[in-house]
Structures are given as C-alpha cells and as structure tokens.
Amino acid sequence: MTETTFEVVIVGAGNAALCAALSAEENGARVLLLECAPKDLRGGNSQFTAGAFRFAYNGVDDLKSVMPDLSDREIETTDFGTYTEDQFFDDMFRLTQYRTDPDLCEILVRCSFETIIWMQKKGVRFVPSYGRQAFKVAGKFKFWGGLAVETSGGGPGLVDSLSECALKRGIHIWYGARALELLFDGAAVTGVRIRREGKIQNISAKSVVLASGGFQANTEMRTRYLGPSWDLAKVRGTRFNTGDGIRMAIDIGASTAGNWSGCHAVGWELNAPEFGDLEVGDAFQKHSYQFGILVNARGERFVDEGADFRNYTYAKYGREVLAQPGHFAWQVFDAKVLHLLRDEYRIKQVTKVSADTLEALAEKLEGVDPQGFLKTVNDYNGSVRTDVIFNPNIKDARSTQGLPLPKSNWANILDEPPFEAYAITCGITFTFGGLRIDTEAKVQNTDYEPIPGLFAAGELVGGIFYDNYPGGTGLMNGAVFGRIAGKSAAKCAAEQF
Ligand SMILES: Cc1cc2nc3c(=O)[nH]c(=O)nc-3n(C[C@H](O)[C@H](O)[C@H](O)COP(=O)(O)OP(=O)(O)OC[C@H]3O[C@@H](n4cnc5c(N)ncnc54)[C@H](O)[C@@H]3O)c2cc1C
Image 1 (cartoon, rainbow, N blue to C red):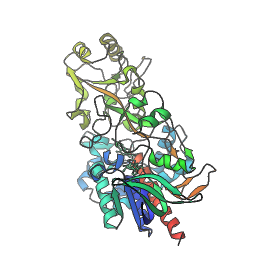
Image 2 (cartoon, protein in one colour):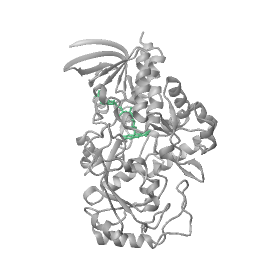
Image 3 (cartoon, rainbow, N blue to C red):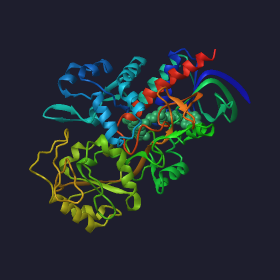
Image 4 (cartoon, rainbow, N blue to C red):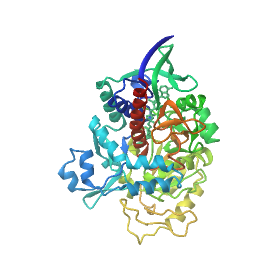
C-alpha cells in the first residue's frame, strides 16, 4: 500500500466537487480530486444536465454581468423578468412544504447570484435558456418559472470548463480512483483509502470534502429507502452515484438529514436504458406534458398536468408515473400544440405513436384500455374552458371545469389531427436524503458536532429538498455549498500547520 499526501482531498468530480476544488485552491490549498469514473464518463450527474442554473436576479442588468456577451437584440426581443431572492425563497418553501432547512436555504438563495458571478469569473460561460424556458408570443420571448440561464454546451460544457480551470490552477484530478473509506483516527478525518488501477492506496489529507452524489444508482439502497417499486425506476444520470460518500461518513459516525424516502424523479422514455446515456443526455425526459394529457393503463388521467409551470411539477410527477399500474403512462397531444413540444420529443429513441383519429390512436396505445382512454378524452374535451385564451408563457387559467381531477392551466380540446402520444416511465434523478452539514459545510456527527476535517456538498447533503424541487436548483446548490466546503476545507488545512 502506498501513501500520498494532499492538503484537501475531494471525493467526486461533478459540479459540487469542482467548485469545492477551485474554492479550496483559491484559499491556498494543494488539492486532489478523486473521480471513480474513467475520464470519458467523468462529471457525474452534472455531465448529464442541460446546465440550467436557478439564481436570484433583479433584472436584465444582473443578467448582463452573468452573460457579458448578451446582445442588444436579445435584450430587445426578450422579457427576462426578475427572479428576486423573495421569489426564490417562496419557491423553496412552497415546493418543500416548508421543510427545507432554513439556515441552508438562506445560504442557497442569498449566495446564488454571487456564486454564479464567481463561476463566470472562473471561466464558465452562461447563455439564455431560450429553447426550454421561454416561448415566443407576439414577437417576444418571455421567460417563466425563475430559470433564465444555462451553461453554454449544457452539462458537458459546464464540466469541461470547470475541469479545465482546475487543471490550469494546478489541481490534480485522478480518474478511475474510487474512494473506499475515510481514514479516521477516532477524533478527526485524516484521509481517504482508495482503489486506483487495481491497487489500494491511502491518501493522507488535512481535510476531505465529500461530493460524490446521492444513492439513486444503487438499486438496493433505492429500494430500502424510497420503498417498493423504486428498484424498477430508470436512472436518468450516472451509474457511479451509489451512495458511497454517505455510507463512508455514516461509518465514522456522521448524522443523516432530510427526506430519505424522497427523490427527484421525472417522466422518462419508457424504453430508456437502466442508467443514463451520455450520447442522449437528458433528452429521454418528456417535459411538455402540461400541453396535453397523461393517461395510465386504464386510460385514466392521474395528475393535474397543468397545475403549474413545468419547473415546479416535473420533479414530483415521476413518482406518480411509478405508482401507476405497470409503472408507465402515455402523454397525448393534438396538432395544435405540437410546435410547443421541446426538442427531446424529436430524438430517434422515442416510443411514439400517431394517428388521424382518437379511435385509431386508442388502438395504438400499448397497454392502455382503449375504451377507458376514449371516455377520458371525451369527458376532458367536454370540460375545457374555451372562453379563456391559451397562453403558454403565463399560468393562463385555461382550465377544465367539472372534472374530479382538474387540469388547471393550458387545457386545450384534443380534436385536431394528427394526434401524437409518447410512452414514459419513471426516471430517478437524485435522492433527497443525505448527510447533515452546518452552514460552513462541516459534516455533523450524531451529537450534532462537526467531525473535524470532514465537509460535504451537492447531492449527498440532506435537508435542502423535500417532496419536490424547483428546476435548476441542483447545480446551484452544488455550486454554492461546494464553494463554501472548499473554503472551509482549506481553512481547516491551514489551521493544522
Ligand atoms: C438528466 C439530468 C438532467 C439534469 N438537469 C439539471 C439541470 O439542468 N439543472 C440542475 O440544476 N440540475 C439538473 N440535474 C440535477 C443535477 O445533475 C445534480 O443536482 C447535480 O449535478 C449534482 O452535482 P454533484 O456534484 O453533487 O453530483 P455529481 O455531478 O453526480 O458528481 C458526483 C461525482 O462523484 C463521483 N463518485 C461517486 N462515488 C465515488 C467514489 N466512491 N469515489 C470517487 N468518486 C465517486 C461520481 O463519479 C461523480 O463524478 C439533472 C440531473 C440529471 C440526471
């Protein structure tokens, strides 16, 4: 067994880990990142994202400092609106049923803008999220749902630019290096035991940051904590997030926090592979359901498709799909809204049927009772409030009336051929339960005291998300707390000289 020494060792090489590394380095530490994936599969879930970041901004001037190359033409033809800290707090409180840890949430929201600027200065390029978060109405784009910006090149662009910056700053990144356990002398963490190129090695460190993701890719843990049927969910992202960091910390007495039976899960292509595929990225998702209806094997609707903007419902509707008989559903649209469907509906790996009549479509919806489906559409079509104008940019209140399960916005009669339907199942994104940290990202023990030398950030931290999640907050959470963890770890290392 060989022994190597670094000041700060970071487990993982996704967004949270890379932000922690850059922050530790700028605070004077010699840093090593351990990534268990090979280089071509690096970057964890962060690599699979669209790079959408939720942060508070007070108008276009703030956005210009995040995106200095925003053109006058883009500004003229776009209503970016505002997304104030208060709106961000409201979204977090409402969606988590007021359970989010108030101290951690406060930091997430209040540090969101300065952290985006910090990332931009490190070399991450941001662009407006036109394709996904804004529709053009009367010649003008209007952003909705507090999510106006994504990284150039999406998740791969984000991971490339952060990794490149890390290497330029002399940060070491070891690919194919799996952390196995924390070295702990009974009082403090002193390093990490790893396996690299088939050999076990101890890495000594003055502090360790865990940023190795949740346990969504671990079928056994998923079933144990999320419950029956979760073994059958598809994993949207990396196969490497198997809860290792959480387990390693619990093994030395860390406290757990948050919603261990909860997770972020969406409607995902029925025939997608067991884990994410980097060639397809996030395009197995099907996120335009609010413009159609969702039906199960009985042909019945089971959620209010138009309850809110996509950003506020998509992360909890995967669970609803999993709960349906056979764990699948079909999204059904008519010709009026096909132009509003996101790009992911036009990839070749879709389970799609189309027909010129609803009766013909009913016969093609595999696994669905045709009579049940036709009755559902008939009832739904008879209930749409056609007196209200349809507008995809606002919650237009064009609802159904009189149905036991309403559709609250964007309801349109399904009557214009061709009709299209897409089959989905549940795709899990990440788990909500994890380690308990304080506001300096110090991991707490079961007596709620910091474990000296141990810090954590990103998906594996519990207590921030419960039940639901506002789109674009995962990356922001990793960046904010990664930056804090890196700074705290560097400070802890410096104090040991
Ligand atoms: C398809 C998809 C789309 C998404 N889109 C968005 C979006 O647009 N915006 C948004 O905010 N969020 C999005 N998310 C959520 C987002 O990806 C996560 O919240 C975020 O990336 C988590 O970052 P992280 O650094 O904590 O974890 P990750 O990026 O997953 O990094 C964890 C790292 O740890 C490594 N690792 C695991 N175990 C070990 C070990 N034992 N030793 C060494 N390394 C280990 C992994 O290989 C990986 O590199 C999306 C997720 C998916 C799957």
